Length: 319
Image (cartoon, rainbow, N blue to C red; front, side, top):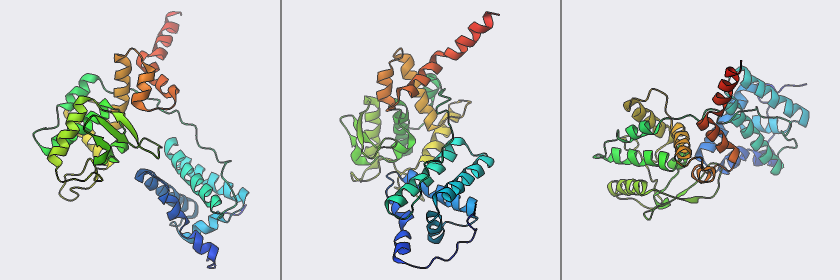
């Protein structure tokens, strides 16, 4: 079976090719989340580099999209094998495959290709295998770290409260605008994989924390980012996920927590702490976490009760 050459063959310019030249840009514009656009763009560029030893280009994508079904599937299966051999995490491999499959689906709808990648399966991933987090006392200590007599401390404290009280993901926090916050104690968030914002209730402590941040932030419009950078180079720009990750690592280290703490680990910790405090109220935990699949929350509850350890020790005592 023919493998595409590393250097794209010149393609005669035609109305169809001209129309397909903007296909990737049009496809990426459909992605609501900036993080999704970034990941999908990176995945398609990676596909071109690994399979064809070439940077992504309109001509190369046109050639790929012109392949027949068997060869197209072979090319993508070859790419999947290259990712496996590079020892990338299954979740990373799946994101890149999903990006490629989504791009091909879009190209088919635009009548720019005739094949599909339904036969290319993603790798099996045991999601949320580790739902362990940090103790409530540890997070309490983290909350004491931001210096709330400073603007930065007020901002960081509000972010920590959202991570814990509402178990928000860091991208959900990054995407917030000032207008999403209602001082009555409501917040509109764009959840993972959603295209419309939904409202959540805030605790009085979090409502006060965000209100204090807006008071010191001053001079803002409802369309401005809720949380912004305070660094000299990027002051006023929307805070990004990597900055929130660094803040969490900094505060957890200062609090003397010896495990690696990430924003998502705080989310896990908050959900588990709620299940403990509510004696396993799965329904309310689903509202907190916004997980559509109750099986995911069952994993949290299983880890909380350590059912596997109980079963193992019972078996050990039998022999």
